[in-house]
Amino acid sequence: MRPDPSRPEIPRVQGELELTARALLTGMVFGGVLSLCNLYTGLKVGWGMSMSITAALMGYGFWQLLKLTGRVRGLTLLETNVNQMAASAAAAISSAGLVAPIPALTMITGQTLSWPELVAWTFSVCLVGIVVAVGLRKQMIEVDALTFPSGVATANTLREIYAPGGQAAARLWMLGGAAVFAAVVKIIEHVAALGRLALPGLWEAKAGGAVAKAGISSYTPANLGFALEPTTMMYGVGALIGPRVGISMMLGAVMAWGWLAPMAFENGWVPPGPADPVKSWYGAGMQWLLWPGVSLMVAAALTSFAFSWKSVLSAIRPPKTDDGAEAKQDEVMPRKWFMVTIVVVMGLSVALQVLFFQINAWIAALGVLLTFVLAVVAARVSGETNITPVGAMGKVTQLAFAILSPGQPAANLMSANVTGGAASQCADLMHDLKTGHMLGARPRAQVIAQVCGALAGALAGSAGYLVLVTDPKKQLLTDQWPAPSVASWKAVAELFMRGTDALPAGAVQGMVIGGVAGIVLAVLERTLPKRARVWVPSPTSVGLAFVIPAYNAISMFLGAMAAWVLGKAAPDWSSRFLIILASGLIAGESLSGVVLAVMEILGM
Image (cartoon, rainbow, N blue to C red):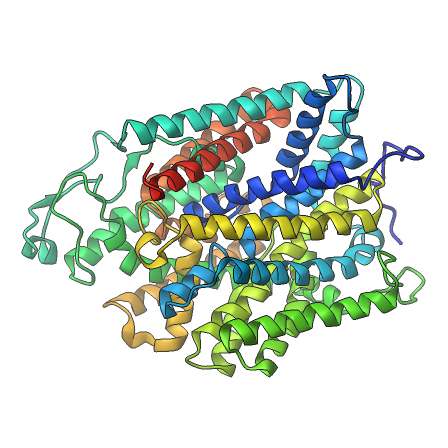
């Protein structure tokens, strides 16, 4: 066994409280709330955020306030860890299909799931990921001592909170202040009906070709999305993604909306938007840009995945200890019960696929078996690089089931849903298990917290999805809800189902060019020296900019550059507060956005 430098610096206190009802319930409640944040963010930009540090601060702060009454004690370090693990598992529920394959299936087939069905489905996907994580914990964290950087960051934050003279209060004020500020901005934007501010000094194009034939004399940058939006969340997201990704998204937006979209409109490949100098043409442009953008992202993800072959081999080899003996099963539970749990979870997943989507039992079972393998790979890649290849996992399964069940979108989407969702959940929870390992937490307590958190997330996240997305066909792939992950999953499923004949003119050529670009960029990203690699655009980010409005990409670019400048000018402050500030902006706007959306649906 390799020495692990991340072993606890804070020794476990004898008799210290850990798996308590208050810690568990706190994590479940806050996790349910944070699941709505990730649902909102996922429908906006296509990915969710790690909520571990945010949840830890929220739980710690809540009980510190109650402590002021003199009637209760604050949470212990290990109780706060249980709280953050439950909340993190709940917040990750968006990756169980709510912001990708589930709405994509509705858009293609019209099938919708009721709240109990959604809860059962998303919880079952999470259980597969949790079971795999239980099996991998000892080997990847204790024997291989993989880094799992996000888990290390959370553990270090908790250590700072509980260290003498720690800055917990300052971090809490930063988190709360940023959240309130973001919520106020969102409410003002909604009440005052503030519009986006077109970027000054840009060109106004004289319409030609098919655009002129449609009766439009000219169009502006505002039509194509080159504007500043009155939002805080996207700037917060930009602060988290870093300068390379932010610049890549800006490059992708200029390429997609400043060059390719006008080309598609003027050549008549897709019809333009309304003849209004300020109306967005996002929906019209998406009909064509979707195809090269998705092709670029998928090709880059699969190429990067192929470069992880060492991790793949390490993941599928039988685990060994240093003396060559096979590693024993982690004692979260006895081996016999662990094997029974695997069979039960697998049986539940297969049964729900058959019951809800009429997928053949043998195909569903094969999908779950493939899920176990790919989730192991995803966990190892995430442990080494801090990047979870969820997109690649899902596309591998979509490709496999396009061959096994041609023309069946339910099998294509929902079997891949199990793979992608379980792989994401497994990798996320491995980071949390790393946190617990560093703090001396009991593995069994951590797993119980994860299961309870996943249930809370399934209950709250499914309800939030059904309230927010009442009609995916009308609401998604629009300015309000770009839903890029839905666009990607839907596009791949339709391509496998209908073939290239259903694509708009020029889309096949665009897909070929996008795919080649994705492969080339991914190869350069993996093979160039480290100093040169930072100048290679992120292929996934460039592709994502094709399928979200340009103003979203601009906001994230500005947020990324502002964070970079702050990091250079005030490195100590940034290391302590920048992630907290960004998380507060995201949480504040997303929660207020959910409330405003619900009020609008209810006619309030």
